[in-house]
Image (tube, rainbow, N blue to C red; front, top):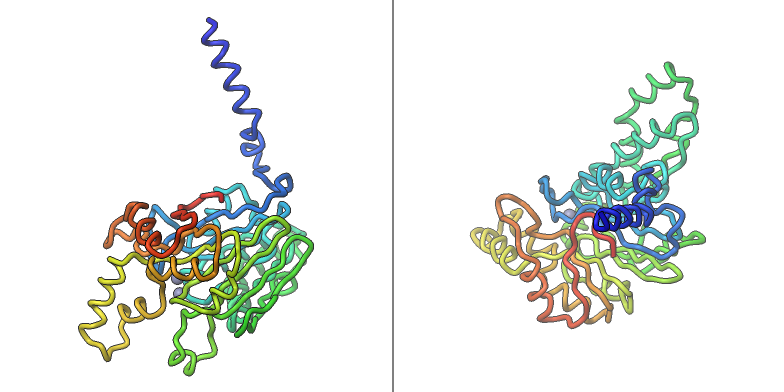
Length: 331
Ligand SMILES: [Zn+2]
Ligand SMILES: [Zn+2]
């Protein structure tokens, strides 16, 4: 009898410490002033699987979510994290590869529909092509808008709410500021000079500075001096990582035909090995490295890799804290 009473009171205690808020969909919104990093998707590359979503992260600052990248699974990841889609007002895209963008049309469409008669605005920041991408997303759900404006008395067009901004940041530069956060961007080393000569597209790393924390996102990149400069002294560097084993696999397919513009060669030249991640973190003197955009993540062809493999490889070149990211991790 006593045991039952104890269990009952323990149950009540557990419920009263936040669970009820989560059940009611309140999540941590508006109540948590501490800056929190939430990983929504940690899979590297265009790999759809059931273990990790494609790349997407949130910086929760002053109770407001700032979304960084929007790969496949982002919408579902936001719901799981207790973040309402209608509350996402600022989105920062690192580059326009689809493993970082493909859920954007879904997110904006659902936000417009879910906002009923008073949907809220959203600004999408990113390198060249971001403006066109937002316009394309709106074109994608044009039919939905037209039908609901006829049927449901809606009057606000998505063009008036959703805006893409093409940023230029060849050197470290402030690209956004509000009362909660300052955002800096810089071009990283995901696109090689020979590729950039043929296209206007660029790839960014971002730094979020809040009153209590600084968090840097590498985006996709090879070893990058610009990223080191951006990340200097940061509390957290969220960095893409590829194990030595995967790098070796891609390098061997590339070396089979060294003159070919192959996928293997692209991966080796435009992403960071675990050893390079540690080197960049050490040179930037960051406190903590959080690994995301993992190669391999859970691609069935390459299989999962134990956290220890990532940690021991990064440890060779970095002595600070190393966290292997997982979806829905809060740091
Ligand atoms: Zn990627
Ligand atoms: Zn990429």
